[in-house]
Amino acid sequence: MKMFCIGNWKMNPTTAKEAFRLGENIAEKASSCPQVITVLCPPFPFLAHLSSLSFALGGQDCFLEQKGAYTGEVSPLMLKDQGCKYVILGHSERGESDEVVQKKIRAAVRSGLTPVICIGEEKPSSPKFLHKRLHSRLQDIPATVLLKSLLVYEPVWAISTTKGGKPATQEAVALAISAFRDFLVKEAGERVGFAIPILYGGSVDKKNINIFLKAGAQGVLVGGASLKSKEFTALIAEMELHAQTV
Ligand code: PEP
Image 1: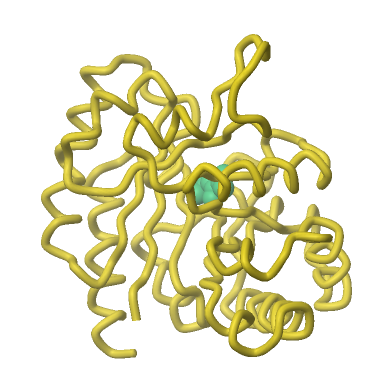
Image 2: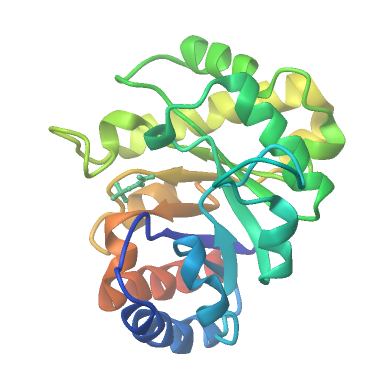
């Protein structure tokens, strides 16, 4: 089973030179771990600088239309043209409505990108609450579109930059993944429901990654640790080992 190790650099680093150096340090490990799909999501201006390196590229967001008079926006077609295969959508730091995220998901898939859809909660909740969240975020998204997406359980309370943020426990992640899976199977049927990868994001590092993999996550979305090449390559290596055992 292929695993996903997705790095979200957010608004870092500040120069193309630093971005390339960080990318180069990660690329070597990524290319020696074939069971892991390593995806880096740098700021838009650095995409072209990294496109020659051996990992997949993703955008951190995209607009909900493909072209037009939308000052400051970046179209999913532009991301595709810059070599992106993935795009993170609905990250909690962006504070977008479900309706906007749904339009972006459709635009991304129409443009040939794989959406990495973030869904979580502000404080530890229950499977019932997560079902509600999934329902409002994915409402009216057809199974054909879901099948081309990755879902991330990304609890805001576990993100390293949230005040008091601490990683979720293995039990919490296992429970959330099973709530996600139940929802998908109910909404889209067994074939689609079991085919969609479910990832975890929130304070992942090399010391705790194994608990999320054991909880059933098919990969991780990583913020802070993706900016440290030693830490991020250690995550890729752990995932490669895990992938060989499942
Ligand atoms: C995130 O912001 O989605 C995230 C997972 O960040 P971090 O790994 O720093 O907690």
